[in-house]
Length: 228
Ligand code: SF4
Image 1 (cartoon, rainbow, N blue to C red):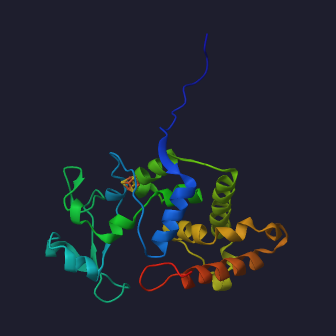
Image 2: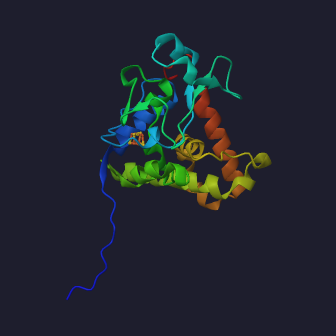
Image 3: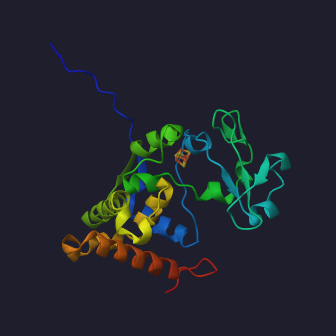
């Protein structure tokens, strides 16, 4: 007799080749072409209580967003607006389960790729991000080389370090939002591939992360191409 208890196993969803994805997402962070997420029927980020940032450049290109949905965006640069969400956390532009302005959707939505959380080994947030968290855990990257696997491990180590060692950063200023932690971990993962990391203090590692982050930002050019 089989006495084993059935386990609720999450479905596995192909996230693509890790090395190819990493190249694309780093280019996206530098402001050039974005990634193309194979979302399928998932609408996680459209139903997870996100305020959507609307950039001045979005407003030039879309007349599709009703003005009544645009609200002020305190703390964001001048000209930015926000689109809120309904009482059940759904994007105000989601109609019958689909984006009502998909072909002219906002740059914020085009840039969103929940695989950054899978790469970093962290959830997108708490209970209000449950739909995204489920997809984050379902994604399965494939690895063409052992080095790609090592790089993925380095990203996870970077995210874990940032989460657990806030006090090691000057003034305790480390990212708090899961998306900021994941993005920073991806940008600075090289720090966690260095052999000397094992003998460094948390403060030294935090300094190395800050240096690597500055170097990454310096590699961005204003026209969106990578500096050589
Ligand atoms: S949560 Fe991820 S897979 Fe789901 S719609 Fe958003 S980006 Fe696509």
